[in-house]
Image (cartoon, rainbow, N blue to C red; front, top):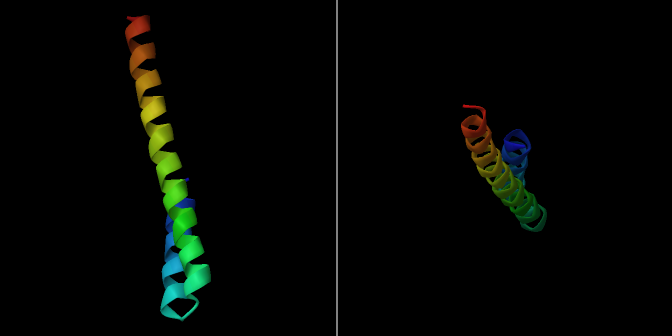
Amino acid sequence: MLKFALIFLVVGLILGALGFGGVGGAFVEIAKILFYIAIALFVIFLVLALLAGRAVT
């Protein structure tokens, strides 16, 4: 997921530098959304792993 966010960010920055601001901005917004989803999933799985680890011991 972070890989796709990075790809969208780079493509958006390149498009913005080439003058395609609208499309570049859309790509950057998609990259931000993917980044926040990846961070949320990381936190959820981290909490689940910590809770599962305590239940086993």
